[in-house]
Image: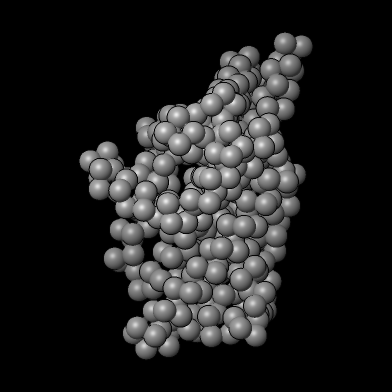
Length: 311
């Protein structure tokens, strides 16, 4: 019977993700009941200076039904994978940072577009939505289980952020207002990668970031483009993150020749991906076991489910 396995697919959501889902749904309902509050909670660049808090609130306000549904479902399922590995505090910290930086980058971009084009719609169009954070969370999936193949799509998890952006760019050619969502997705992906690449602190080692080649910026692009992307990315890396590298070298994480020492970040990054892969495999194995036994709860089922939920 497949129904028990299907039921298990919709269980195990974390308490934090459930709470955030309630926030997203509540925000959507509030905007539908009182549309005037959108002026105060959405990102409207012309009004951000007096209403600076909208840099924080805009990410949690969905204006459409499909927006709130996709954001809620994506948050619950991605959080089910990432939060047990990162921890609740780090997971919430990631959401807060990516949400704020995405809104800030979108604000700067729209102001710049206004001065270039002098079109006032860039100043007064309400921008909001959780899609920027979701795109950042997809980068986390890329980092944790890059080689895990997603059976319905037949693609590896490492291509999820790239495929999402490619699809959004293609759709933008057929929509009237691509500026309402495309910058949010792009900046959400980029700020999520920046944080995970250079700033996320590992509790086990105390090091920051994930300097492994498998998580470099060029891995978002097809293989034939990487010789072009790598030199450009290395320039920005030296400009923006040279001080961070020096700090890690002083602590023994790196050597000047780009080699690593025991306990350094690349090794920890590999361990983190292995933990993510094990967590996913154990969860899938538990679901298959439940489906094969017809949903009966035996004594041997309980340890496997507990193990998968506690990873």
